[in-house]
Image 1: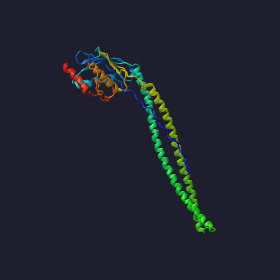
Image 2: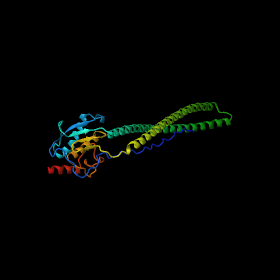
Image 3: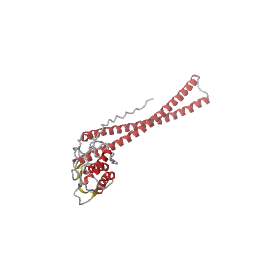
Image 4: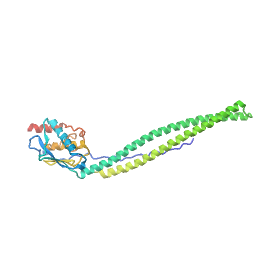
Length: 308
């Protein structure tokens, strides 16, 4: 029994995307950075430069600033910062090539993710349709085998009576009924074969779409890797000794933890060695969604306020 075959799905060999985790400020020297306010709390701050190209409103930005300050205030059990439109200290949001690069990365990555979801959906459809094809093939094979058995038995009986010069009337009528049933069985078998061919065509179409999408994805990932992955470590935020300036963030959670880090510098804290600490110089092992001070961060607070 001839079967139409269908091609295999070409392997999707996506290049591993590795976005650098070093998104925090550069290491500073071991000396204590100057604190704002000369030991007088709360420290007043105001909104300074603000660029709308980040896609965040002033209200949302200031709310995130307040949330970041509260991380230190909750641990210190005192108010450390307050919004004051007349304060000399400013918190700034400055757009430059760093945030533009971040937006470019997000745009390309979104396209890859979108295609990835489409790819997964097509693979799911391919799996289901292939299962259906296997079932229709099995029905066709079983029906064909049963049909062949009945046909062999019928032909054997026809040959038996032909060797004897012909069948009696009742037997002849029975053979004619069987022949009609076999003809109808052949038509039913043809319909099953048509179902198999329909499923084969559907699977082939899905395979073509999957392979086309896989090829497009590989090109996009190659572009992504070539354009963005080799970026060097840059400063996400900076405390100048007076002002806090944020240059880059991917989302609100990323902005919040950057501000928590810079507020730590505003309190006079240097970097620590604990990679999970807010005051570590890299943002890679911290809980970005819910910033929590580690023991190393708390030690900075205890030392500072025990001396004041």
